[in-house]
Length: 183
Length: 305
Image 1: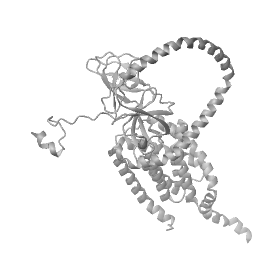
Image 2 (image 1 turned 90 degrees about the vertical axis):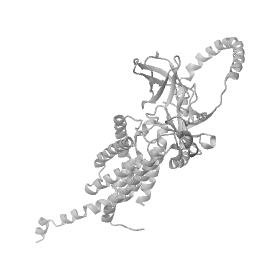
Image 3 (image 1 turned 90 degrees about the horizontal axis):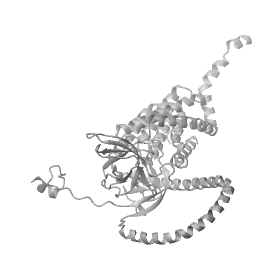
Image 4 (image 1 turned 180 degrees about the horizontal axis):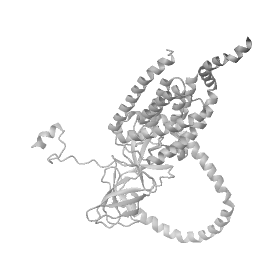
């Protein structure tokens, strides 16, 4: 069920990315598919997140003037890095996720720009300006979207918390003072 | 379906990542190498996206028009009084103009005979913009079924907008003239007064183009109009590109650096027109020249002599 929900969210994100720039130019600075790919990487199945990254990236590239596969490359890389961070750090707190979104956005844009330079196709946008606006737009939108998504995936979050904190609760029960009072 | 343990997933992930990165890299290399005609994935994704982009564009422009009309309504009363007075003045003026318009129509018909237009205009609506913030391509609702072909010029009522770089049956992708590196379609512009030629490139900003290779000895004025020369084999000659806003003068040995404000209105463009223009075929290579391409089997012997 979780897989279906994230897939639907990803499809909506791609459709928004395709259409919203035509409605208002500032929407171009929000990378909706990246937000969903990072969210998928927060989950336990990192392989799925990698595939989401590749597919979303290629679909965005297909309508873009950039190289086909450049976005796919960046988003796959981001999905892997975020899933590796999630393996080591507990990131179910929204406040902790904000720097992750910001860092991922920064890395995504830098790698994307670099890949185009590597193939001799310099992008039109100004490097620093575009990255700055993109960072603000994606981080703000990402934080809001995660609040919404968390309400849809509330069961999974609870389950994950139970799995992570189960061991700590057991040790609490073995309180030496309480044991002593029984005697 | 195979259920994998978390350890298995973590073990496999780096390998999957490497495989996906490699496939994306190969795709990029292939895309950078291939010409616009062979971009099959792009073409068919554009067809699929058209079913989403067209309705969204229609709805958003309808909503925008509605709010625009509400704003206009507020000032309608005061405008109405002014306009009533103006109408009376214009009625008198109109009678004078009628005689002039008859004369104008007659002169126009004479002028039309002189024009030898060998291309038609196909109006098109912009249904999508580049989903990536790094590029600024447009997608229009006209494709190969409407007669649109690769490299056809796109214009609006101001001047040149760009050219077609990918065509699907229902849609086409446009690169704007302001794009940084128009490697396949650099425009050769012509100055209005001196007829000096120069190459136009984008600066990455919608409000400026740069014209290079204009000899420093040529006199160039700010405000001068720049037209297409037709020499690059994409745009027909005589299309308005823009107006010179800044000249960094060169010398006898260095070229001018000329900055041009495009005539096309890029910021609020909703509709454009495809110029159904196909450039005249280029003459065959002169095989006797020392640097001629010697790949044709039949003529190889002749050119080597």
